[in-house]
Image 1 (cartoon, rainbow, N blue to C red):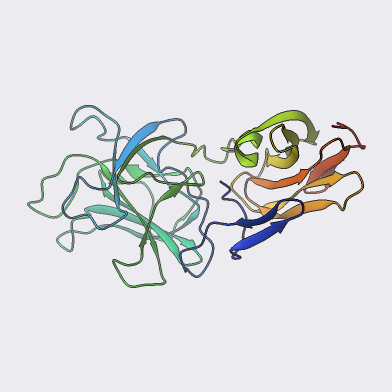
Image 2: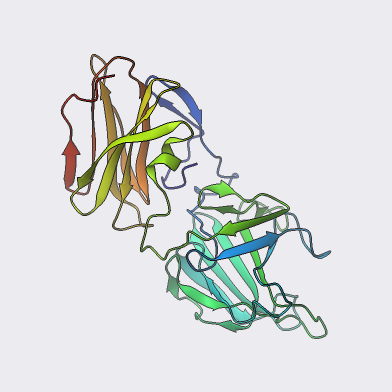
Length: 297
């Protein structure tokens, strides 16, 4: 599943494939940001939406240790870039304790509650993967809880609690009520997506080419459907929208291109090419790669 383009349409047409239904934006003012797990890269955490009677739908509590205090002090990072609009201890107002709220723009925000410490100040601009606090058990007076991170995603298109949205990490909706995930929140240092994941099941890589140092364009083939797939995976400016494209041209047919300001990749562009040669390539910024007609099926 792709989470990288600034798009509000519900349907896209790809030549030779037909209509593809894209993930909705839950009626919010803008498209869903490319959220990652709120923990450092490659850590595994278990989320639970049903272990508290105080939970609303889609809220999550995260732990990874085997004992009650095992997670105390573990690093919490921003799920996406944005502006800190709350960094405060909530006192007796509610059960959040030390709370950080990040406004991601477009009507989307995330909440990080019960923190032992807060590492960011009000109005700070944060990047995806930046440390914002540590796992704790702060709450209102008299509310004794075990250390965990309470995480929420909210929009501005409805009143609380109807505005709480399902969590999506690395392009996939969380498997409610419980799921263990490995973080791909790599602080912009590496791309959490690869070409096989983007093109989908049944596709295997047959070729790739560097687009300078900014990206790599990949050509894949699905033997079951006789389709090629092209995707350009960014290597720089990861997590930030920048110009990138991918194209596929089956000999004798029109070229199909996906281009725009994307955070992680361009594509997938798919087209059936049984017994046909293809041109393929893409761009990243001012650099590009263009193949000759080749890989004739």
